[in-house]
Picture 1 (cartoon, rainbow, N blue to C red):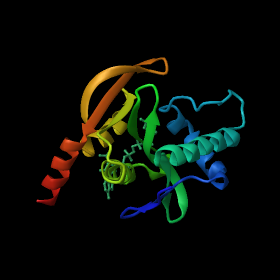
Picture 2 (picture 1 turned 120 degrees about the vertical axis):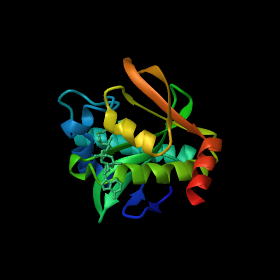
Picture 3 (picture 1 turned 45 degrees about the vertical axis):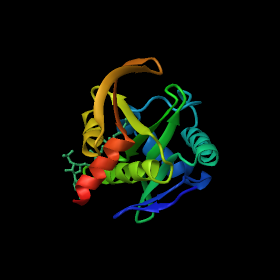
Length: 182
Ligand SMILES: CC(C)(COP(=O)(O)OP(=O)(O)OC[C@H]1O[C@@H](n2cnc3c(N)ncnc32)[C@H](O)[C@@H]1OP(=O)(O)O)[C@@H](O)C(=O)NCCC(=O)NCCS
């Protein structure tokens, strides 16, 4: 499991004890409406139990693939999740993010996404990384564009048809980071 610090944030794998705070963020109505239903979530189910199941899935992914979304912590407070996630439907790795609404508008998602690309193309040596979101989710697409992803196509995902796909490959990422360093 990998722990990182960015300029303003701490990124660490989520732990079972985070489940309550994670559920508060993940199932906030303004967050949940943009995300596919969490596996195992029931209409009136126990959201903390669902959050714990997600944390268990992330822990298994850390073991199996050395990647999963991190918990995002600002001054030790959980404000979101973000990072890399393997998607079996596409047999590919995505970069994703979600923040509690109180943490929107500060550049935190972009900061985490940049760290995730650096980890994916650096430590993990991935060939490319994608991101998907609803066509109407312009805030998320703005993050994608800020970190250098390019729109490619529309895709179907989990029964949704209004999904847009952005990606970046390692050559484009290397070009982007070397241009930024010049
Ligand atoms: C998607 C989501 C993470 C985007 O959040 P966000 O706050 O807009 O994105 P960032 O954290 O990168 O912040 C960027 C904003 O902070 C501003 N900002 C303020 N201080 C900043 C700083 N120091 N550095 C960078 N940007 C800063 C930027 O100008 C930008 O504002 P703008 O949108 O008005 O141009 C958020 O809307 C969310 O969690 N939504 C619900 C879940 C979701 O949709 N997840 C994605 C599913 S695919």
